Length: 324
Image (cartoon, rainbow, N blue to C red; front, side, top):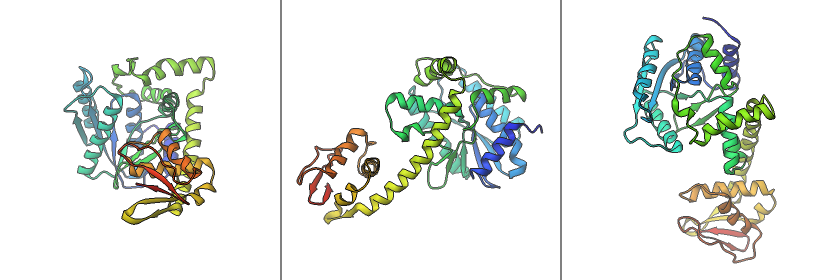
């Protein structure tokens, strides 16, 4: 096996960030594109050092006429590498990116549960991280959206999603695949500019590289990395504050102590209110929902909100906000 600087970098990253332990079962999502082929090749090469049990999973969205051939291509790669292969094919194809992503993670989780894999591993890169930061920034978001694509996150109680390639750019994965003559399956949908992410990848990033900073992908990914640590700290602090400020009244009505919340900075007030709303609303709370609840911290007695989605109302009674 040829040991490259990228092998060494990923080996160090896995160890330093505690992404996997030895002797774990890893289910690797492989589309056939350059990033996922780089990922599976690296993990197969590192397998003797870590003694992992590896398998390949492919999700067929049935978006393209060649999607079945794409699946067979990945299956053949798995056979050549003597690696277990699992295929999930969508029954009701969706054209929406978000819906397709949700189905894909559900399909991968299902495979992992059935065959007892502790980790699902994807080939997201620093380029993906930069594109996600820009995409969410233009849609409107806070620090949480800008730090999206974290190194790992739980999918359920037993399965963790891991992204070991977040320090590599797409140009690096392409060079790696060329060096090892990996057979990349070109996905034609990646060239379709009707998708916002493709316009960012094909038009915006190249423009920023040429006119502002050739290292824009790595720098934006580094920004996301810095924000991730700050978001984790703020979320943990807000969680502790919420526990301190919360109480349950009659009929399990949630109460929030305004005296406690008045003492803390605005950023923590907003995070506490978002955490509260995430528990009681059936939709993800937006900025307007959070602010509508937050202003009650300093509002006059008996102030109340108009209904939140689902009919929940918050009302001020003395030192407390009652949410019913």
